[in-house]
Amino acid sequence: MSSSPTDIEGSSPESSPVTAADNTGIACTPDAAPADDEPGEEVARPVTASAPASRTAEGRSGPRSRNGCWTCRTKKVKCDEQRPHCHRCTRLRLLCDYAPRIKLTKRGKTRKDQLVSSVSSAASREVGSPGLPSWTHAVAHLEQSKALSLFNPSAPVTSACALELSSADHEAIRYFRTSFAKLNHTKNPDFSLYSIMFDIAQTDPMVMHVVLALGGRELEFRRNKDAEEARGPRTPLQHYSSALRMMADTIGGEGNDQLDLDSICTALYLMLLYEQKYGDGKCQGLSNHLTGASLILQHRFKDLLLQLPAPSPENNRKSLALTRRGQDENGSRLSLYSARMLVWIALHDAAAASYGLGGQLNSALHKIMSALDASNGITRAGIPNSPFQPLDSFERLHRFSNPLYRSMWADAYPQAELLDDVENRNVYAFLGACSQLRFMIAQLANLSHEDDASQQQRVMAVDMTIQQVGWKFTELLEVAAELSISTDNSHRLVANIRGIVPHYHAVVLEFLRLTRFNDTPMLSNRQRNALREIMNLAFQAFKHEGDESMTRIAWPLFMVALETDDLLHREWVLSRFQGMSRFGKNLDRAHVFLKEIIEMQNRLGRRVDVRERFQSGEVGLFVI
Image (cartoon, rainbow, N blue to C red; front, side, top):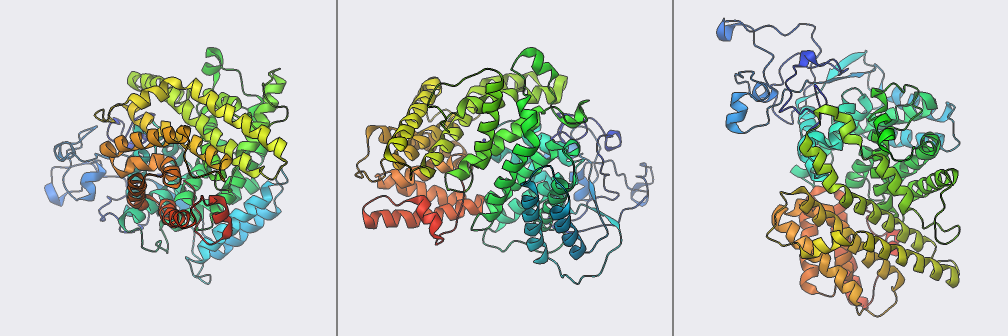
């Protein structure tokens, strides 16, 4: 919908000309010894005070240089220390990693003391809202439940110490910045949102813990999706537990003017990803985080959003990429990065709303943006007091965040990346519109109990909005329909068209499934067209990128499996979900659910209500 700046903004470990010693922007210190451990081995070394020795002519008996790349140092081979790529890595086509290694400081408390303090601080400290304490209390309890399963509560008290990242942690970071970033976004990972996330993680332990948790858990799951999640110190689950504790302490203990909203948004978004992909079968963790995101939006972002400037070149120049990098230390302005993170979190919230789990954040966002419109004298056409007017307000927030990348890297931002952003801007606006349509349909399902006249009015309003979005993005829909399977995904816009346009057709299927649920199984021309377009683009994407590309259109394929009467298409989609099941527990649960629901529909000869099955408690919940 892979790497990030290390020593200078916009540079990657492969291209950075700056040494670790020059990196003054990283609060955590590099390792004091080479990372000679095999990948995956968990090793914690004590911090040494010795400085890296300079290279001498004494050969193997002299001090070892510590200026080589980490790829060579891990394998204990000589590195010529050439930057940005050493000769060995260039010759073997390896990732040449000069990124400084980071250590995290752990306070000298027992796990039990930490749990008690995190819960009590969340419950007792005064917070500037009535809703946030309950969420921080829930987060603290979530951290407690995870931590108690990892450690013996009667473990002895440890003294204050500094823990360096293990080789497994370094592997998790490398995976997050490369493979994970590419899987979750088509943008060049050196200049993507994940690059900015890691830039923040280098100075924020809470964000670093979530990065380590997500990257490490992904690696665990890829290697064996059926294995139990690793438990014990310095595991992904322990990193996630630490991040939960820090989030509860941060939200529960800081004032409005002291919060680093960039860090909070980053940690919260990555926690949502973690819970969506690897959370419990009832989606309780995901639901709690979505509730927390909604509360943070209402009580920490509301005033910032109400001051959102109108889009203009002058206002764009004044905008801050990250609050921490500007002069606005009191946090009185919304950063471009936080705005973009709110957009991404809203996408998750809209997806969860389809399954009856989320929706609070989008509802709150629409109310705030409507108040902003009213203060600016803007009125929206449509049904008075209708909850279905989110598209313009969402688009305004999205457009505000558009200058993020060029503001973040300034003159270091390549012209090719700048032009690529402009070229793909419209297709991402289409994705945002599709997510809001998905949310609107979820709201329509929630209001199905109202009287027939009111419900019919809302159905007509949503249908008209779906068609208006189709008219607005007609060119993208037409290009997608004419796209040839021989055109590969090397052009980013092509990959995005194949990964985003199917979501619009899935919206059509979802809407018609809801509003024509009790109709005969005979499909209308509108439904058949949507099914055909999804399958056409899915076939193309699968040919060029395999199952990884299917994860971007998992929901459209899910809708095809529910609605199609073509047995070959249904079997093909089920095969794709079987392949996708190695990318997350949610996709594995979706595969199991689809097999069950299709069998039920075939046996009953009618549609089965997905939400009703979720609410029955008889199936594992998921969000895709």
